[in-house]
Image (cartoon, rainbow, N blue to C red; front, side, top):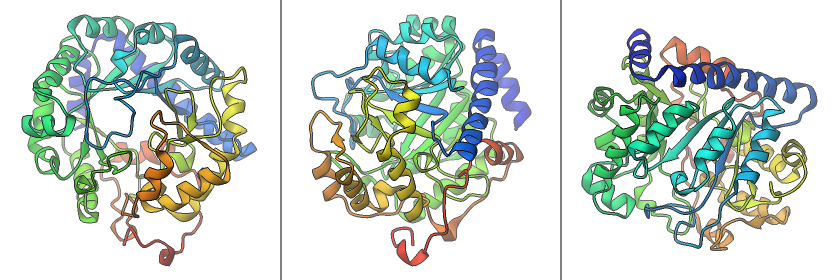
Amino acid sequence: MIFSLSSRILRTVDPVCLAKIGWNFGFKGARSVMMFKKRFDTTGEVFPPFLYLSILNSCNLRCQGCWVDVDKPRESMNLDELNKIVHDAKRRGNAFFGVLGGEPFMHPELFDFLATHPDCYFQIFTNGQMITPKAAETLRKLGNATPLVSVEGTSTVSNERRGGKDVLNRTLRGLQNCLDARLMTGVATSLCQTNIDDLLTKEWLQKLIDMGVHYTWYHTYRPVGPQINEQLALSPEQITQVRRFVTSMRATMPIAIVDAYYDHNGKALCPMATGISHHIGPTGGVEPCPIIQFATDSVRTDRDLFDVLTGSAFLKDFRETAAKHTRGCIVLERPDLVKSLAERHGAKDTTIRQAAFAEVSRMQPRTSQWREEEEIPEQHWMYKVAKRFFYNDFGVYRELDPAAHSPGK
């Protein structure tokens, strides 16, 4: 599996892109995690090695269950704000940044932003429809970004899930433009009731491999935001099915498969609770994660980003409260705690619609990734080693009382 995947990447990815993947993402990304761990162990300060930036709210699609204000007037971070975030983070050893939206390719300064930081690596979460051959070629020349293109199902399901016409074909055209430009290219899927049978399959992974896709990322649909669409959420048994499938395919298929919610032993974790990642929204608010749209702090300040994040009582309380009550997603399992934390710290609603408090009040507790009786360890040694040293819980979880945790049962 490793030989086939490595060979395929070496044959199909541009040499400049390969060099920056190896150095900016591989070496410097691992180093940033080690610096994070050392800082946390010695001073208790938490500055995430992986920051996710939603650079604007605008999008050309209207996806079911989207929590972003895509239908509201545009809010975005300008180039100076984005550059300050990255410059501040680089001084603390960071080199990897996730770029989200809305649709990031609608930001007029996206390429200028990427070009300003050749010593960093960026993962761009995109629907792919605005990646023209010219845009893909620009990314190839820059070499420091990987597009992660969202595919949400068959042609019919894609139109329904994403609120458009001919969605799948337009997305696949953008995906193919990336592959033609020899970019390291991934495909992401938010698994839900309408696409799990089509996309959580060996046949789908083989199709991605045949197309030339290098990695895939399975998320699970999270019913949050203004239109929760609870009927799309996976059942507890399906959540376990996803985990079992991912660990099995990682050991057999020559395509990298990303996940963000388990350690090497299959124990659930939350990237926000461990402190390995936080999110900055298009209005500048520093949020625990993308689906928690509350903030007490902003990047729109002269203060260094390190001081903003390490000095935030709100973020610290959120991490510790989440780790105390669940190894899973506090938003899904304990929306009441999310609301009380925001109220206790006087956090602002960072949405443009200004409805986040009402939305979280309406949420009902449900299962997330934490199911104690269904811990499925990694099968492949490469994933096991990588997670053990670079992606684990960093000791933030205390012993949890199973009786206090009913959603995952």
